[in-house]
Length: 220
Image (cartoon, rainbow, N blue to C red; front, side, top):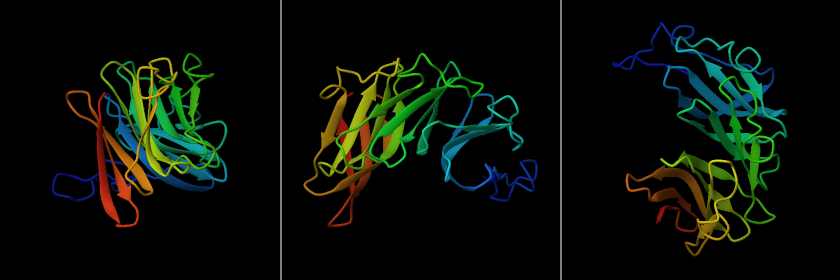
């Protein structure tokens, strides 16, 4: 991670000369970032060969000892994290994939980095659109607390979108049993997700074949 001043120069008050690095003891990939209201920074991704990891830094760029073990959390089950959300109650939602990418995962952590057992199944919800790959591309939290995730399902080669209620269960009022797909006529990846002010869901990604952007909007 790096922090820049308004003029684009590295901010020497952050980390070491404007740069901060987090080591989980192997090869790490930072895939997602979020900033808490208190200025602390969450970064998540994967560590090979361990799997999904989350770290929290203080605003100065040093690891936060109040989070996990010395600022680091390794999630159970391997896999990876592609998106991080911070709830108003300071709980942290991380979304990604279980090891092997056949299943999307959404996990909620308490502010100290421990699993929130009241969410999903002992802290984690798994979502699959089929038996093949289901890579997750993005996540967002609606104003009512529901969580929307988006990605790709190899089974139908479609953009895949799901919504969870505040407790981590698939929301039956969305799509079919909490899941919906968008068919662009060829394999299409959902790589990013945003919410419109009116609550509608916008998913963007790549349509293969013509190498075009793909954008879809769903009713919320």
